[in-house]
Image (cartoon, rainbow, N blue to C red; front, side, top):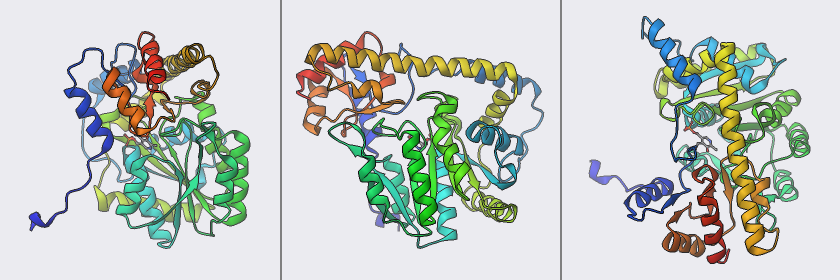
Length: 394
Ligand code: PMP
């Protein structure tokens, strides 16, 4: 029976990682996979997480099951981090999930249960997993214009024109910050226009928030999400703790549902717990517990925020350096968008041939759509990349 299975396409980014590992050149640079790396190429365990882990080891007396939807303390800590002060607690349902991917998946399943006919509008381009999960779930999907390939910024006019076709009961999937793969982000004015449109159309946003703290800061990166939460009766937020807490393999995420009233909150909460039960029962708890400890202990939190800020400003410095190198090499400002983009990624706008040339000639690995991971660079490799970009004729 199993021989009837059809081969599934390999994940392009994971395949690229394999290619990188097999490349014998010592000078090789990995700008592919979306993982934060420090200047030495290491993905560290954050200090506060390590501290919390030690405390947990000392105090934890049981590993029996926790609540099906996850611990209320985790829900509260994450809702506070994402929605900020004054959040409408009585309208928020929450679900611990298997990473941010699990939150996206459960969120989409929740939508499918509420309205099987909903069309899910996704940015063009978007994180490829959005598309594969949507297709796997058999949900209707339509793209909206997002990236202006000339200016490498958001094509807000195109986006709003496409979204003017949304129907009541549709869902617009938006990246909360640090758009993956482009690095181009909505301004607060854009978020306000989106909120007004969603309100007018009776459609709901699903915000994918995978990089809070990696762009302009913890609060600034959640500002768009908070604006939608303040103006709309309902929304879903799928958040990941993989990047901002550096706990990728712990698989820690959360799905928040903002509902119009307490009765709907209870309905959503019960359905969300049901979804966990059907898919995997309990989400992993270790990472969620560490996150809760870090967020609720003043000392741990201050240390975490300080380290996250170092990570964020380090990436910004690399962006500035790369833009400056390219300004000098090309005698133009056409790569200044790299300094304007936020988060780990920028879409360079290179052709697949140019991406291949950088890999063949300079052992520089970026994703085929020319998404590069800024955190894969350091002060020494930035000039090497700048030279390669110019050599490849980008
Ligand atoms: N959404 C986006 C846009 C992402 O880039 C990622 C990480 N690659 C995720 C969600 C989920 O990450 P994880 O499942 O590792 O928490």
